[in-house]
Amino acid sequence: MDPTQLSGRWNYPTAIRFGAGMLHELPEACSELGMQRPLLVTDPALASLPPVQQALQVNEEAGLATGLFRDVQPNPRGVDVTRGVEALKAGSHDGVIAMGGGSALDVGKAIALMAGQERPLWDFEDREDWWTRADEGAMVPCVAVPTTSGTGSEVGRCSVIVNEQEQRKVIIFHPRMMPARVVADPAVTVGLPAALTAGVGMDALAHNLEAFCAPGFHPLADGIALEGMRLVHQSLREAVMDGSNLEARAHMMIAATMGATAFQKGLGAIHALSHPVGVALHAHHGTTNGVVMPYVLVFNRSAIKERMDHLARFLGLPGSGFDAVLRWVLELREAIQIPHTLQALGMTENQCDELAPSAATDPTAPTNPVPLNTKNLEGLYRKSLTGDLSG
Image (cartoon, rainbow, N blue to C red; front, side, top):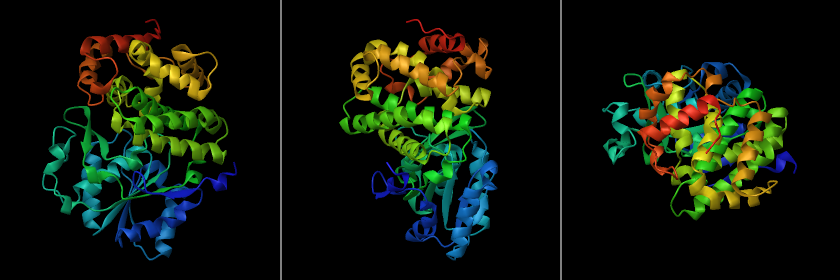
């Protein structure tokens, strides 16, 4: 298909402008939300690159005075949000443009949430009904502009932020944290390095895969997750091998959005294992998801056999059932150079014991197909550390 035909305007799960060149419509998206002085939130590496500079330029030409906050770390921390809120207030900004990968999108959404709140950020952790503590009138609108194709945070209602004091990743949630407008332009991902393309692509796969495997009856999420995995199967290798392939880039951006839409059904052990590793090793989240993925599949095998039969048929994989899916994942990881073990990321044997309790209490753990506890998660860490794919 001609990549220029891969465009559209969708209203699910939020208002999305999708297509190459769509970044030029950023001022219109901001204006629809009443923004006159938006604050663009991004990370230091992206701030000086063409996509951010283009976004600032099109807003300036449209008469939108746009500030820039660029102090977002990988695996963002509470201090990033605090400083962003300070910048928002200092510049009298009336909205947020969250632009970047998952870190910048999460921080931008959290800044929009916290703009006028009197409670601390951690009071809005995704627990019980804590989100009801927020003053909705104190929030400001948010436009999301993804520049990678992994987290799908542009259509998410939460942000993952590290609580520095507790040294754990905390999911901050509010229904209105989902950006009211998304400008998704796959052309801005063309310059993404191969290693990062691979990492974020495995994140998109993990979201779709875990959503599909999560227990419970949710045919809408299952259908979205299946198509998301088909797009990953079709396009991730191509996006990594040829970063200028705009069709592959577009498919991966859609797959990421689909994964985040589908995982309202649930996630599982891939993410439960990955979150503590990201904090401890400062490792890229999507890469760690890719590393632990096959070990989690083997662990869950008894509970997902029927699902894997269906997935293998849907993707047209050689062979059949679980073994075909596992082989596909292993071959895909090898082709795009995702490490095979956590040891390759710098994890040590001692950390298996240290991180397992955090994995067991991670909010993604309860929807794993096989019940999780500290003991079996410690075992999963050890298998992922050494490369043991035995059942």
